[in-house]
Amino acid sequence: QVQLVESGGGLVQAGESLRLSCAASGMIFSINSMGWYRQTPGKQRELVAHITSSGTPNYADFVKGRFSISRDNAKNTVYLQMNSLKPEDTAVYFCNADLYTTRRIRGDYWGQGTQVTVSS
Picture 1 (cartoon, rainbow, N blue to C red):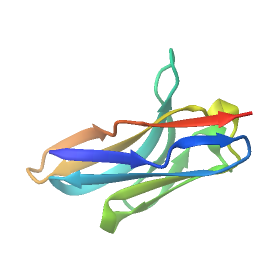
Picture 2 (cartoon, rainbow, N blue to C red):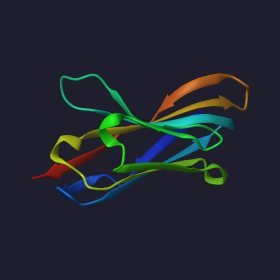
Picture 3 (tube, one colour):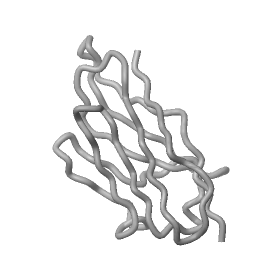
């Protein structure tokens, strides 16, 4: 089995920063891309940032210049540094990994989500 565990969410004021972490563990052979998504009630889950196995990032327009994604391949961990947070960034943030298990089966895995709340 594979588990993705997020941490680092919380309540902050507008303009402050948070750093999210997501560690993947279990029967992992290799990880392709990793990413962060977010969801608010009544809305579809949306991509925030994505990073390839070689470290190439991609960002949604609404976070460009404020958020930064990175990964530590040795630790199977992806990070999301969120700066200049806005109230509209309030959401549940989910970690995602596209990976191969030790049985060489490719799959898309999700964490349980971590709440980020930004007050004005």
